[in-house]
Length: 248
Length: 169
Image (tube, rainbow over all chains, first blue to last red; front, top):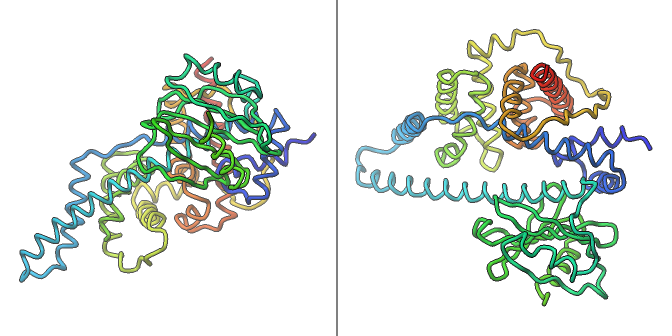
């Protein structure tokens, strides 16, 4: 098998820049080709290293304040001196709105970081030659395997009669919290279901999101936060969600 | 409105400026000037278009007209951007581990890259801009983004490899 045409696409794949069809073809190939899967994982780790190394410099807070002040002065010039009280109220409102927007921006950034981290975890699983630590289609084997490895327990659904197949599970980490990653297969698609304690996730996390051609569904159940992610159809992901939600 | 859009990008702009200038004072001057220019030209910004790409473009253009930027622009580079396919390279250094040593080596390697390679890598890997946003920021076609990014990655891999070999010998 020739690997070159696939490897040539890896960087664009990991950058999320391939077209949906190309993305699916490469996904399929990565599941079947350990050599390309290993190279994909190496490049993903490389990207993470560059990303971390590139966030190197921080401005000091005094400089930030100076810039902010100079911008505010530029804006204040447009306010008439006849309206000092209005200007003061407007300035306070602007600062409050600014703070609100900064906080909102931070929340948005954190949410998108979590989505990105989940996509990376899922891609790493797809690319791994040993995607699961406990290999079993039996929920009564997979669930007990996690006992003592993660700080909570969860229920797995009965999959008989559904199109889903349980492949296995592994311990995963999100925001330094240990959780469970369960790998399911539906037709030829692989889906990761992650379960973490809800506090590992920013509040108001979106119920669904799309990133790098993967679809993600998320919900809260008790103190736990569930995510299902994969390139299967949104209907398949919702069906798996229903099964997990109703697991006893 | 300007402040609300621009201030959340302050840390990112400063980090990018410091990477470009490799000097704290120059980075501060560059960021300050970027904000002044952006505020002045804000009326030309079209609402609904990409503000981040717009203000990064101002910073980058301001850098290119600075003393350090002009010096960087005069360095002769093997930078023939074209869309011709590069030979496939599948030798990502496996020894790269995410620890402090590798982070330091990676930072040194990024700092040593020529500006056109450094800036495109940072926009892609650190700022996580799409190819389209990078094209808008650097005012280059999409094909050039892809080929330059590929060359930049290759240059970074080779610099890191050299550094790792040197540090292990």
